[in-house]
Length: 245
Image (spheres, rainbow, N blue to C red):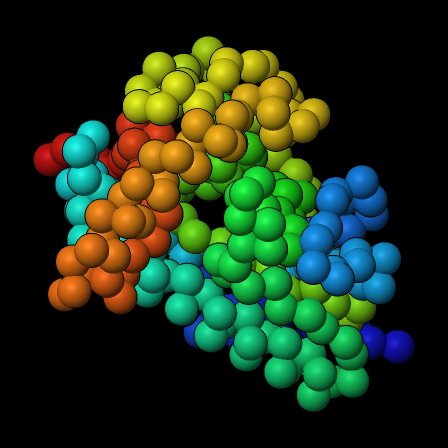
């Protein structure tokens, strides 16, 4: 019988040595009602490996209402590329050991009209105990706050899962009050809202994100970094902000 603890240490160590700042294991039985898209079936697996790559603080701090900035756009793209590299390495190691695995791409929309990917990386990370869902609808890691990008590998490899964290936003509503598009709605919950629409209007958010993507795409020297980004709700979150000297 496979040693669960050895498997877990090997996989998490590989994730960290490959570039993840934080990694954890989610028990998929906690996510039986999580919607999936594009042919992903959670009942084919038992665990999700969640990896976290932080975004550079300086790039985040230079986000403005008028422009997320090319430095943030570059960090966004680079983090996604690194995550896909990490998760592909994890998947390969799992298959070497005779188990099945499936990489969920770091940033790939299956339904752009609803801003949906194959499955929620945030939900997997939350179930793995790597953070909680904040009022901005993003994963908030205790150390890096929402200044992170996430990746996921699904597997049937025997692993030891982490334990979810409760919401630690308290009464803070900085992200809600700072959202330029008015897409965020205040709601209190323990670890995550019952459904996305309880705290988030994806259409209002998407309109702003796509505006900046179009802005980048119109500049030939920046078009390669065109992405649907804003970042204001990430920047204003007090968790993960750099300490002043």
